[in-house]
Image (cartoon, one colour):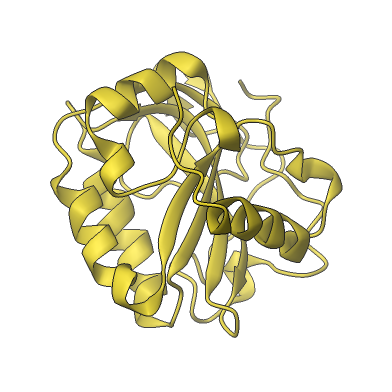
Length: 193
């Protein structure tokens, strides 16, 4: 896991540690010292800790004019034991919502497992952004991850599933990823079995 680093090709357009409105403003990173672990596995030092011992993230891009943020995740999303959604909602999403972000693209390519609890924080997130035309979309989740998300009833508050799992975002600019997700959502595509 230490070789998986957050996507870095958008750094010419946005760096969360340099954005005064970002919850990660002012963070400093090492390229040499690996200190954070997910279970017994060290992870690349560029990932951001946001309160969860099993899930780390990187705010890859935020566009305050168009109101969207793109976040990449790594690890195990565990709402059952470590209440990851609470930390994500309170310490990241709420900060961005306050600054005008209401559309969230969550890149889940490296989310290896999902353990759901209840949907209260997801419902709260949805309530906070829906009147502004906002949404949360989980992109490129593994099938077993999406199955557990559906079992936890997240499809009522977020978008995810097969229709969002073939997004080749690595070779696109952030605004192109946003336009692609917006286009898919405009066609009413939500979780499909």
